[in-house]
Length: 172
Ligand code: PRP
Image (cartoon, rainbow, N blue to C red; front, side, top):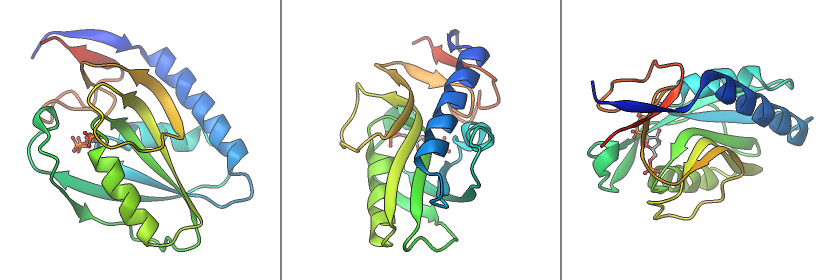
């Protein structure tokens, strides 16, 4: 195990997720939104966020496979699991644990727009800005971070650390 430093404790995550849920619920009241989680890292945030939203929600998932690990993202990407529910005419909220280079979410956003939804917005627990290559509108952001390799609460390093309840930065 590498050395790590606590970045966002449980209470802070819970509080921010609650705020995001309230904001989304108020923005989407009466719109029957479809929340699409970008697998795999998002599952922990997704489960908490959905329960923080007081209006009815529908859910689906998509998975983008990139070649190479997140630390050395090569930028090549494909959809390895697509959404299963119809998207046309629906209000879609894409949900991510982290947006880093922006390559994954930009690719998924374009794919989603081709399916002719009524609207598409992006919700990410963390917006990591230092390595951004693709500009995407970040509609709902939990935390903005500059740099550092973050793990926990869904985020992995070589598939480890995902089940930690809090978010840490790995020490280089
Ligand atoms: C992570 C994260 C985002 C993406 C962000 O997923 O969940 O989907 O990387 O990076 P980017 O903005 O540079 O594209 P990853 O591909 O590691 O898969 P995982 O969710 O299964 O960990």
